[in-house]
Length: 122
Image 1 (cartoon, rainbow, N blue to C red):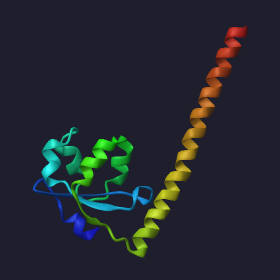
Image 2 (spheres, helix red, strand yellow; image 1 turned 180 degrees about the vertical axis):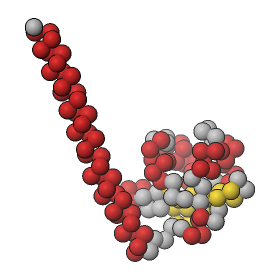
Image 3 (cartoon, one colour; image 1 turned 90 degrees about the horizontal axis):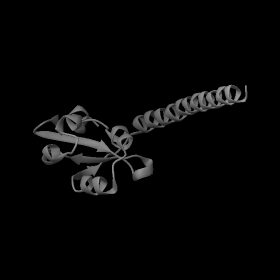
């Protein structure tokens, strides 16, 4: 990641995108794509020189976008033991945190249904 971190400017922009589910982290030199990105260059520059996988996946990019990204691959990120451990811990925390939010949403929905039912019946 240290090498990728050096490439974080408008004239030299690299990102890391990928995870265990997508074949592992890969390094992309997207410098020539900045002006063509539908969301604008600024979005990419905000995460340049970093692991941008979470941001990329959260957007829900299409297969066409993934195919376009593949054209800019310059390497595969080799992870040391410390980075592997950090990623595993982050994934576990995200999984644990996500379950709580779902329970709250379900509870609120059930509460709204119950209130609506009782108002309708009475």
